[in-house]
Amino acid sequence: MVAGLVTGESIVNPDKMFADNGINSIIARVESVDAASKKVKLSDGRELAYHKLVLGVGAKPFIPPIEGSGLRGVFTLRSLVDAEKIRSFLNDKTPRRLVFIGAGFISMELAALLTENQPGKYEISIIELLGHPLPLMIDAELGAKVQGYLAEKGLYMRMGEKVTKILGRDGGVAGVELGSGESLEADMVFMNVGARPNLELARDMGLEIGRFGVKVNEFLETSNPDVLAAGDCVENIHFVTKKPVPIQLRGPAVIQGRLVAKRLAGHAIPFPGVLGNSVVRLFDKYIAATGLTEEQAQQENFNPVCATVDSRSKHGMIPGKKPWTLKLVFDKESKKLIGGQIISDDVAPAKEIDAVNALILGGMTIPDLTTLMCAGNPDCSSEPSAEPITIAAEQALQKLGR
Image 1 (cartoon, rainbow, N blue to C red):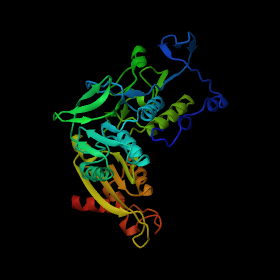
Image 2 (tube, one colour):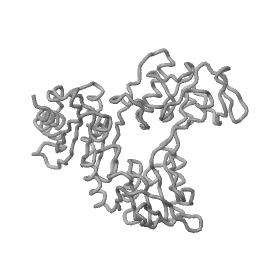
Image 3 (cartoon, helix red, strand yellow):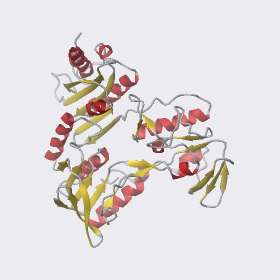
Image 4 (tube, rainbow, N blue to C red):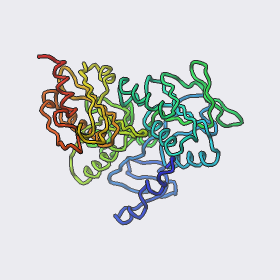
């Protein structure tokens, strides 16, 4: 929407859809929940009784304690309302110098879309505390390739830098100051450095809260058996490490919503945990990742064995083939696949991250993947002899030795 590619109405569900399915939509704020009497008090004065209650209160953007974050022209992007405010500012104030704090996929996608759809209109700087863009998705070796590519596209990449202050003039943004003492001029600042779950209501209800959200069991039930929770407000457990993680993505939220409905209908299907499976398009590059990066695996005390394979979207003899790179991360002790990363010049190979995701969930090992047989067609994939998941497993097997 910010880049002018879609309308706000196209990305939300219409009220009629709910009404047609027998769902009563109430536009009001929940002021309090009396868990003992099972009653919800609304801002319009009404009270609703319940047998079961589902919390889906989401999260809000995290605003780091940086001086100047309240200046006019400083924005976060989390909701449709945020997007509308950003779009209005871009249209009304016509800023030229844009600074993005944080190089996660929200920042990078927005910066790329604005540059791509309005070439030459903006001077965009990306400032990231860690050493490369998309640091939670990919390792440094692939991050360096992405950084170089984005720089070629005209983005000013400042990795390993910290914004210590947002500078102002007449109540509006004038620039940012870095930890090095250097200042960059800016007309608009985007702060996209993560989100924090909305926990006020859950705390008031006396629900157990974990490190990253409302604690739930594998069936998404809270510490109160009559209250379930799903989406960005819950504490997710990583499938590989079995530890709580601050992963908040649309995919897991959708599945959790479906599982809550199934649980209310009497089913007992456990949520498996999250892997952070994600993909983003930046200009003509597609970057995808799932599971642990090599660096994250080391931090979690795994002994990672990694393999990186260059491949192509079509058979070598077919015109129009495009390059892509796959990196797989295995655990040396168990030999299990625990992570994968892809950089591709074509969209189809990037979606192979879903296959990697499924292989991790299936507990596949290095020996298992040396026998993986994928569908092959000269127009649709590389040669079967060069299928990168299998080749990566072969390389990892050689690193293991006998």
